[in-house]
Length: 218
Image (cartoon, rainbow, N blue to C red; front, side, top):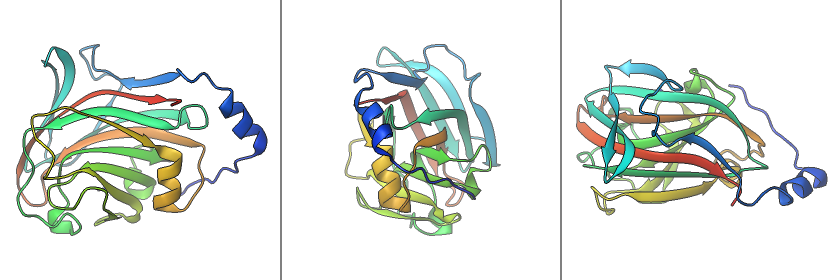
């Protein structure tokens, strides 16, 4: 579900210009305050996960409800990582999934995940991508190739079963460093962000919430 890529040399000039960038610079992907998903494209793999903007804890949030389904939302937006290398997002889940093997095709399900996509569009199962996932059984900070896409899409468990459900978490990742660590490549740009709550392979149910996704200089 889930081939080409570009490598960008990090010259001294580029690094110097990045150091001069506004440390408070932010590029908003979505805070869901608009009340609509017009900037996102839906792609269904198996059934349709229900995505709706609601108010939760007095803030707008994207609610995702999956019943043995797998569909995602993609926002195509080119981000210059030399200016804003950090991806920030909020998320929470209502439940983890059962005793599935997330590193197998039969258990490749996640209550919540965010993709960072290099050179893709909706053919992101052929691209280089990082999946930041809320795992059910894989330990936090573990990493592995996606069961369907192999090393083109690397999985990184940001949260796992030990983290509290029904609790908001604020996350921050350096995308340049993560692509180097997980794919072994230096990149300057990414081409899009995708959100996905999916339970199609093992036939489970999950509810998750996403909020305030943005890139920052620090």
